[in-house]
Image (cartoon, rainbow, N blue to C red; front, side, top):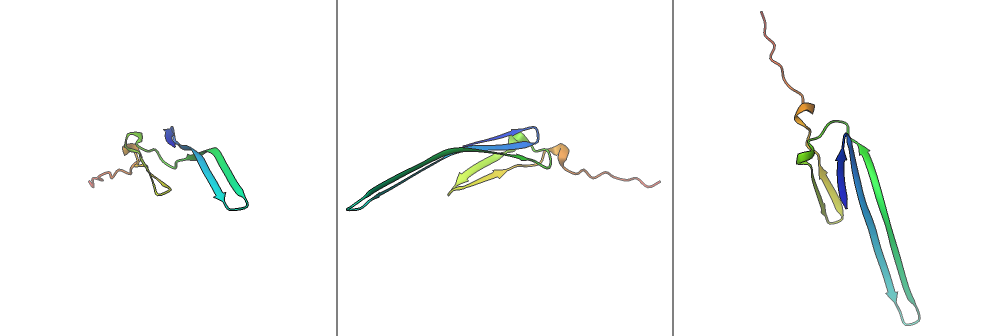
Length: 81
């Protein structure tokens, strides 16, 4: 599995493999399913690509995308004269 960030797009690519085998006294059944997938998602804001983390655990992919400093809101002091 791979996770790529380019411009404002997150791309996830992977491959599925699933084998099923059943043996009984009067029959034998074997099924193989293979296939690749790719999903691209447009991100609503800029992210810091150096701090992106991806963890795949128990069949769940978790991707952490922290905002870049330029995308975070900044507070500006207003001086009253």
